[in-house]
Image 1 (cartoon, helix red, strand yellow):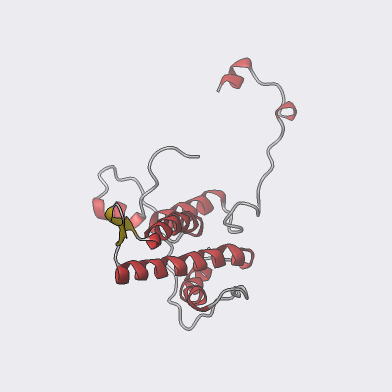
Image 2 (cartoon, rainbow, N blue to C red; image 1 turned 135 degrees about the vertical axis):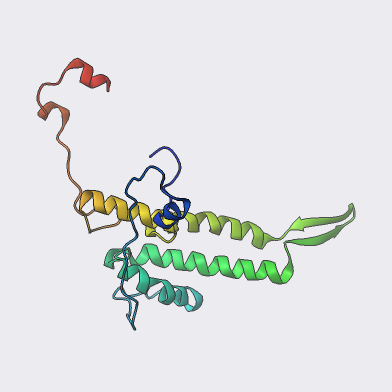
Length: 180
């Protein structure tokens, strides 16, 4: 796990200015989606609103090479969570954040159960969004990693992984090297 704040998108760095004159990377510019249909098929278990989210989001992710044939289930789970989160938000907007309970001990305001559901789904969505580069800083991080390693394969590191030699095969090292 890296320390420090997540990297900012290149557009934000450019907007802030560049007093140190260091090179700022740019997000790759892609051609517009002219009727591009996702080449990654949606899982058969996706229904209604989740399938609608797949159809909206997947073409752009396929175009950026962030969604490939091995990620249908993971991205499908993201679409289901997003559809459920949107439903919970709609419920909260229609019914309010709190409901009133009348008991022999008095009248109480309780948080709506949909608020707890929306909160749990929100945390789940954040994790998925980071993995698929669905926000600018995570997308910038993914592209930076790809540019640094020259890897264009699997987003989750399973393709092109290099095996490191065991320490006993690396040859003699100084005792000070073990302390670093």
